Image (tube, rainbow, N blue to C red; front, side, top):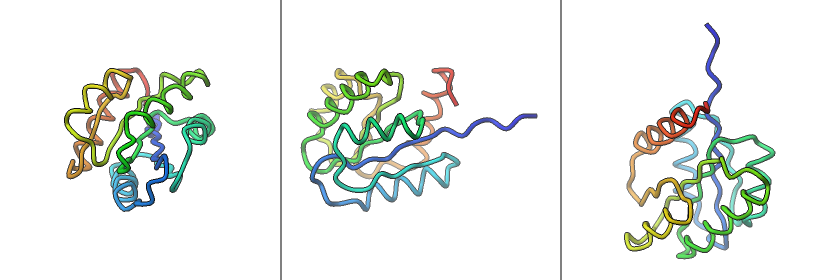
Length: 137
């Protein structure tokens, strides 16, 4: 029986937000759930995130945003991924996201929004179900 390829997730901190504890918790938690996780570190530009996603051949990009710029940063990452022909990569966003902004994020192409306090197993199950239904993983 061949071993199934692990789902690859890039966790990124776009913009000027310097708080990375949540991103690290998610990165380690997803690793413990069996994912291959790449963490890009702080203050990544949308271009750097899209390039890293391609270089690392990831299935998912997870943006951790606490700065309040979640809509504009998510939009820019989605545009950069499309520019690179990688708009099949699932984009999820987590952090301090007001409920009123979630519909806008979904409209621009974000697959899911995980607000503060979302459990790692819940994030992992969403990613697994989306990647499986997409034929990846």
